[in-house]
Image (cartoon, rainbow, N blue to C red; front, side):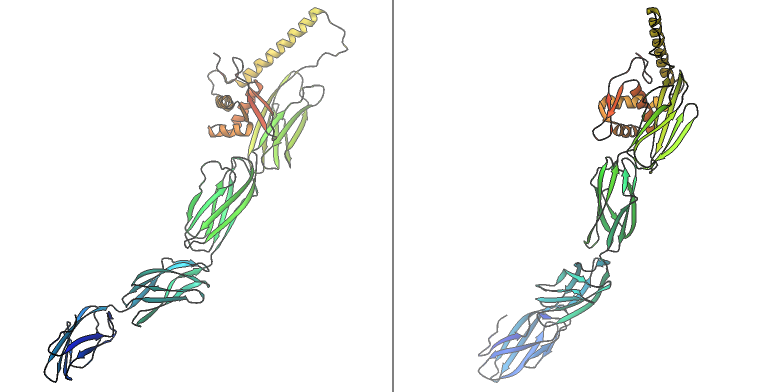
Length: 489
């Protein structure tokens, strides 16, 4: 409010501050224009205070609005009156806090300065105890401000904050805000540098220090079997383990990245060579009863060394081991005109096994090329005998692989419909992929292997070497009526 004139007197009130600050003294002085000297001053305020001094010093404890009135009298008895409205702000105060219980050394981390009261502009500065990176700021009003600081030492993390206002009032706070720790380290390892398609591989991760929790992501350069987790959270540092299984052979690069609660990013990786699944192929080069009979086993894929066992139908067994993939041959002397089955089982270093069975018919001695020529009738008789032997062999195969009426089907017969369906759908497929599909369909690898051998022997499926040293299977079509595992129309 402006001066109030009374006679020849003009009066105004001048304050040293406006707004004022609670508990901070300030002074009011009169500005008087009069023809005669002023003989009396009368001050009063809206809080009930008063003074008759020429200048009035006030110290208001309670923030709010204040009205001051001044009345003056000069020597001639004239009076003049003036009023002034003042704002009194709360006293300046600060509080320091942090949203984090742990922080990483060397990384900027947030903290809060809550400022109340004071007369803006407000100027702030802060430094971390024990070394690090501080800062400063100027604010146009009080409020809660987020700033950043970094610490150079591990242990309790303290911050010294200083804030001053436009009236020169100042306050400080030395506050412990968190525990400073090392940014941490990762170590990713597997339980071997070589894995096998479809076989579980153990993965271990060591998380050392850092500020938990840790958000993590995992990836592999080779496709994995199943829905392996790619994202997650580790609640604390320590050792974490899980298994992965690869869908294809090759070189797999495993990568794991963690981000801790203050944004520290760490990455670890390792490399694994993934071998094809264990595959075996049993071959019978010839049937010569006058010489030792040879069986050849071709082992590929898997993880060497390999342990193997040949089991013959007469009870004879041959055990051995091989340090690397390749061909193993055994020799035995079967009696002529004998039916033989040979089963071979191979187990690799990881414990994965594969079984193959061959069914053999050993013919009797063939006529010598030096024998005298026979009559036409004897020639026809020989052809008839040979044809009969072939029919008997076919009947034996049928009876050997077909379940007896009313009996439960053997595992290889149970797997035949599945193997036949998958071959018919695929037309061309490698053995390893076919066995994986059979396993996903619920068939055991042993039963699927045995069923596949039956389809090969009945010429429904052909087998030939592939371009990458694998075995390519081709669907030839359904065998003749009465083929084992089929229902004759």
